[in-house]
Amino acid sequence: MMNVAKYAAVVLAAIGLYIAGYFTLVYYGLLAANTRLMPTVCQLEERSCKTVLSTKYARVFGVPNSLLGVLYYLAVMLVVTGGFTAAPISVALIAVAWFTVALGLVLAYALFFIIRIPCPLCLTGHTINLALAILLISVLG
Image 1 (cartoon, helix red, strand yellow):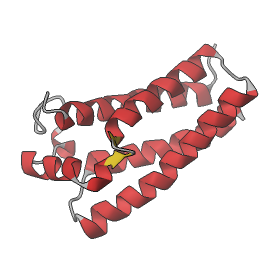
Image 2 (cartoon, rainbow, N blue to C red):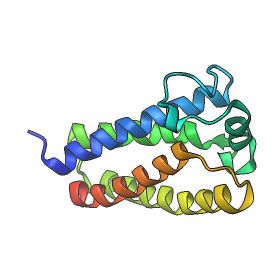
Image 3 (spheres, rainbow, N blue to C red):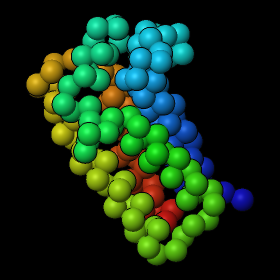
Image 4 (cartoon, rainbow, N blue to C red):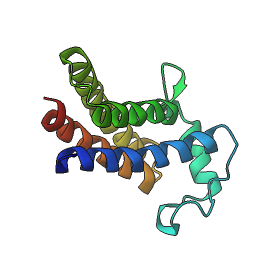
């Protein structure tokens, strides 16, 4: 049976996966930014979302942040539910989790002070990443 921290990590990773998947599909032009798949409060106008996704801040190592997010959230769910607690895997995932938090701080700064587009989904993703980093220490540490 999963304990509360593991359950919370899986739920947060699933929400993060949904958001990252949405951004990935919008990034590649496979989904409209203003789709009804997102709650109205989270939607950006088509122009604003495309602006956020077209900046240099939307990519790390030339890969869309959202695509990396999809891989990250899948890894979190796999490791947490699969019981992969071997030290190298745990340490690596916790390190990646805290890297996402650091990157999120840079991206949040860029959202507020450089591109000046409030993005509720982006901020939700950054908040999820912080919560996951804390939870993963409890679950895997």
